[in-house]
Image 1 (tube, one colour):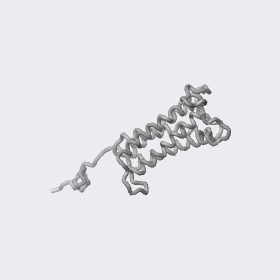
Image 2 (cartoon, helix red, strand yellow):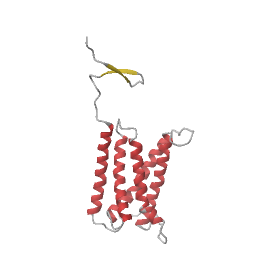
Image 3 (cartoon, helix red, strand yellow):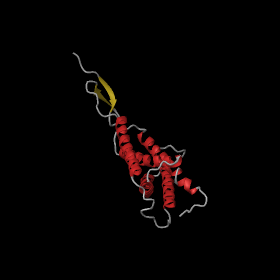
Image 4 (tube, helix red, strand yellow):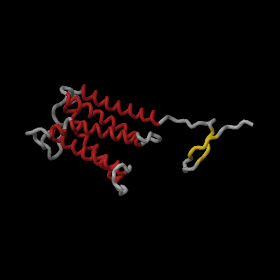
Length: 207
């Protein structure tokens, strides 16, 4: 008598179960899902770039935070604060995943600090991005400014991709580390080509 061949597969409880070859599992591969998320992020970045390009820059701030007398120093310091929090994000994530040369286990509260630091860093970037697009527009008149415009728009695209990926199941194990690393790299790129550049100039107002 002919019977279906069964092969052992891991079950949810960590043991070994059986699955018939006649009924293979189906589903969208995680890499394909991640590609879809990346396309969504790319559309967000492209939309921001198009708006910044076609919008007529006002050349003036919508509003200055208390303590700042100019648009550029406000943007530079807010971006710097976001970078500092971003560094904490990377270090805390590496500690929680056991990627730091520290024997002590990460405290449970670190996950909360990780989430809150990420939220605060993102909020700090919003006035910067808003004034970059509304007051200054997407500019390409020299290499530094062109790179800053590109990095800034791509940062929000990468942020969209990561936030959507955080709520998805069955993604490749490398998906979140890669998306987080890309997000941090774009933040550093946008900051280095504007905030850091400004703060290292001589004779500029710092508030």
